[in-house]
Length: 168
Image (tube, rainbow, N blue to C red; front, top):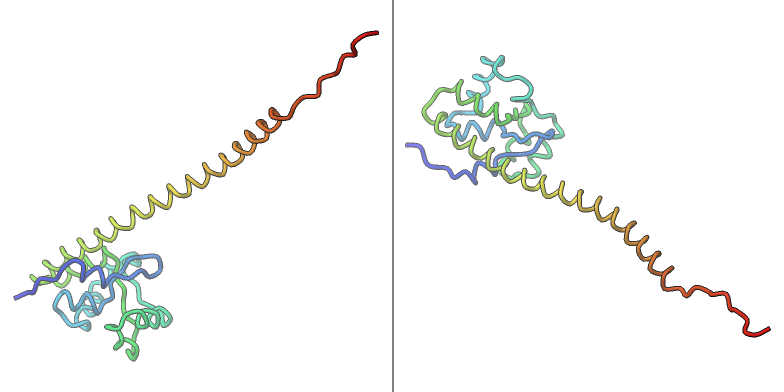
């Protein structure tokens, strides 16, 4: 019987590497109920289904950084090979090559987790854009306000009227 895993727990397994949101082969294997070795064997047998935008192998520096950030990945520290990282599309493709009931169920949860992360990121990008727009507008207003203040100061200065002499 497959235990139910909340989407939030899957979101904790998604990392940002090389500008992509990815899941590590070890985490996907655990979610799909197979050994990491078996998952990677299936990927290699079906490598034509995994272009570089679906999957890439971490380099030594990325592996060290990942192990430092995530305690549950400490066993990777002494691994002979670097793990593979799978984008959302790669994680879905794995479910198709594993072809097990658990992989089918988990692929839906994985997709939902990626979608929730995307929903979280899009509003932040929109907020950042609006802040940039406000900064641009404020910059233009600063100049306009300075010109207005200068004009008001000139109006406040009394004009020196030519004094007419009275008499002869």
